[in-house]
Image 1 (tube, rainbow, N blue to C red):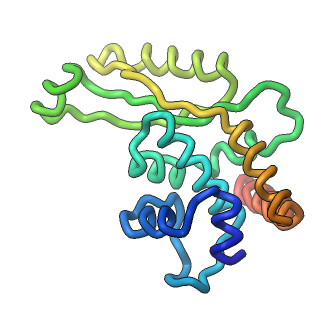
Image 2 (image 1 turned 90 degrees about the vertical axis):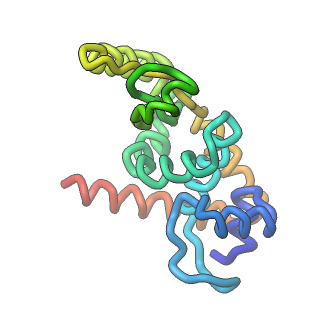
Image 3 (image 1 turned 120 degrees about the horizontal axis):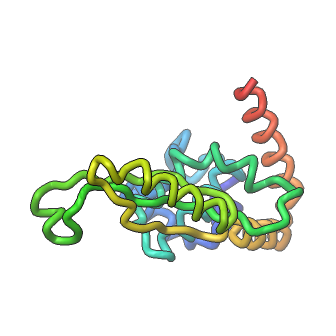
Length: 184
């Protein structure tokens, strides 16, 4: 798809898109530069998820980095039509104490770790991780989460409005097939 279609799916303006691109804040690598580049539906969905994470408090840099790394692991669950409860996607921050300014002053390491699933699944995952890191003096500081099913719902509505729904659904189906082949 062309840039105008990509912008319609993500809700970005041309200026906002180029600003993200210049600062390296897109969660995918552009195959070519300039106006005539082709974009995929997956790249547009990644961008929509990164923008949603940034709206919830993640920096644009962290949101783009996280989505570019963790997206494939969550794609199949997100696109699953059998999911009845909302699917949340985001990251938890794990690291050493002290907290806040003291941590920055002493250069304490912190890492972002993927979390995805229902509220219950995420709560269990964070509890398990907190128990795992406690002996080393690390803690789970917090998380940034989005309702990825809601982002996908809005994404599909924008695709329908732009006349791109069939293209989007076909690309999603092809991506799922590729992921399943990689797992085998």
